[in-house]
Image (cartoon, rainbow, N blue to C red; front, side, top):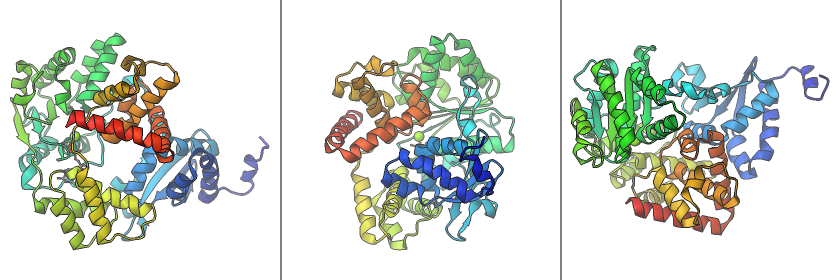
Length: 469
Ligand code: ADP
Ligand code: MG
């Protein structure tokens, strides 16, 4: 083992040198602009055994890096530190200039074990899929969400033990439904680690069910769901018209409900308007508590903005916050969108935030259409536009035109829906998340470098929005 790599062992390794080696590996893999913007600001801060800790400037940075470049980073760390190499991410606290890791806020410490990214297929149903970013602590109470929040909170304390079973929360896009139901999951698991909690979107539930049938594992599928203590299904409207999936869901629902297990559902509309879901299920949805979330009032919007600005370390004046809360009224995701866009602008070299920039961003955000878009529609429109057969897109084929259509559909699914990389991969014939990341990066590059690509993507996007509005 006397190659140039191991000669480093005469000079003891430290975090700096290890990270420098990692950067050398990553650099050729990403565009220069990306490298400078996203990788250079990262600081290596500790090396303990096989574990390298790097520090990122803020949460936004973390999301961006973790989503797009996790695989690059993990691979480089393993190459440099060996198979057991681990990477810890730490986020800086702007106030104290200290990494959160040292401030005893463990929730802010985000650790990623590269090996945890490869999951066994069968374990999947038992994973909670709960996102620990969404808690009751960081959910702002307001008149608009009072009942939904109170019920969710009660369930978090006592799953299956309240009269809110099922809990059915409905309401428009971006009003906090998904946040609330993850908060339930977090609360339950925090109180009792042994509880089996599972979050799944209805879309994903359908995909998993179809796969289970194809692989002759239907019983296993149903069985795994029936073993849960808390089943949380998001955006149940996507089950409409899917008869077989609905039948299966009916069975699971009954078993869980009869044994006092908690069921939590969300939808974009009240049960009675769920056309394509049969009455026996609809009536069950109303067995517990059905409640809505409304668009937030001004004070709630302001409170949410304040909290989010804090968590992203963005400093805005009272006037700016007022302006945003006055102009973005219908949707909390858009409030967040304004902050993220501002953050992106700062990251890309605007040195500070001024009122004009705030106005510009608010204008940009409020003119984008608000729609609820699914991967199915995106795939359909992309295939129509590029004149390829929709079925082929899920196949293994590497024919150039199919690959392109698939990548565009993956890219748009990432951009236009809230789906996780894993879920997008599943929709396109069970590809894994790294394939999706690759597709997204690929198309992003094309859009950034070719006006023609950009135009085409815009055109497809408009079609999709038109179809969904
Ligand atoms: P929905 O599922 O209703 O479309 P989400 O739960 O995804 O909406 O919410 C959109 C974004 O707004 C999320 O980032 C969420 O954290 C945030 N959000 C929504 N309501 C609140 C609230 N009351 N307090 C803090 N953040 C909120
Ligand atoms: Mg949602």
